[in-house]
Length: 256
Image (cartoon, rainbow, N blue to C red):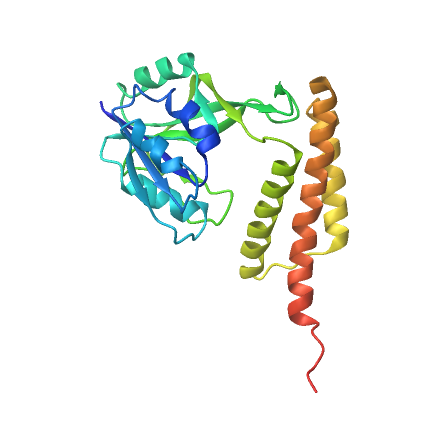
């Protein structure tokens, strides 16, 4: 049963080659670029990928929908450029696609700030990435998009890890976090939701306690402490951004 490895990318020259080296066994590699200004497309072409460009960015969900529509094989494996398919995961994928159609969850193991994070609620970070084309599809969310699984399709876990090299450095974390917070607040504001600084504080504190204590982030060493603090900050910023948006819209002074 042929399989298409599908990626959405932008300016991923730093990661893409290492990712595609772990996907050479796939029958087809589809890369949808959203306007890279580096060597991303050239690297994809080196691996014989089917490369397309669509810079009309409407969010992660829509871009994944566009990318999966370019696939021509029976199975889709959705991968990000900063991820690597381990040999164990490859073998379980090849075995899975010989079985009746189903959606498969994959465990991500993230490398962050110098170590693999095996606690903090980060592992096993199961994501739905292997699915039959035309029977499951992503929603249109701006951020934190989800694969919609129709009734009748089971969800089965695969063996093996998908290694995730998530952040280059602290600046990259903060930039990525700000991007997600902006998209989250925009989406919630469009739904008519309102935010408050108080909710931001309580959710931020709850996030830290959950990650560091309940999810045993302390076992991830100093990286676990740093991640819990950064996640609490990111959580607060989401609600603060939503509060600023709604307050600005409703409390603007009258023009004279």
